[in-house]
Image (tube, rainbow, N blue to C red; front, side, top):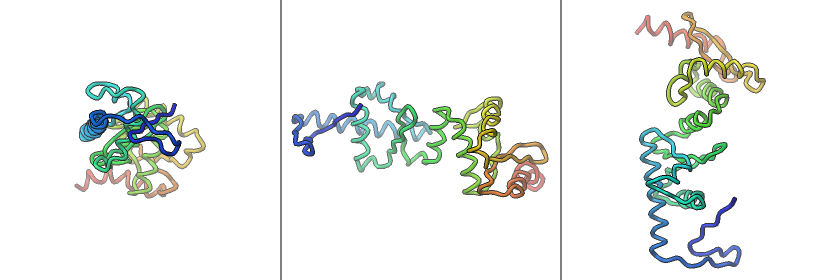
Length: 205
């Protein structure tokens, strides 16, 4: 479904929208500001806002107004920090003043239970940027929040998929498991870092 949201008119189609009153125009601006500030407040608490939340109080946006109101928000310079992300089934909003795009991506994939993408993207990014291997225990913490059984069920499936064949595993001498991408790290390097984190750093504080 597509929506039209015109205040001054639709000159491209040669049609003029019906004029709206000053009060109605101010109401549009007010709801946009309310949404922007709502998103910032949620982001400051480390939470995303999904489009469905805009239907609820205190915002109570009508279903048909959600998309055009978000589009209006994105045009506002005073809310340029508000980022919209289209997930598989929902629209998500966050403020990059409080949440980085990478962290938002993790939160969204966790929310949508796209566990393959969540694990693989995290491991590849840590291997590429830092570089360092990723402890499997990381996925039991926020924002991942996977149980141990849930993680290993997904991980065992992931290992059998050709598109994720760069994801490899190393163990420290205490049997702690770390993952890395061999596109960005060598096995020996990944193992040495895992060993340092798990064992040597404790022996040499």
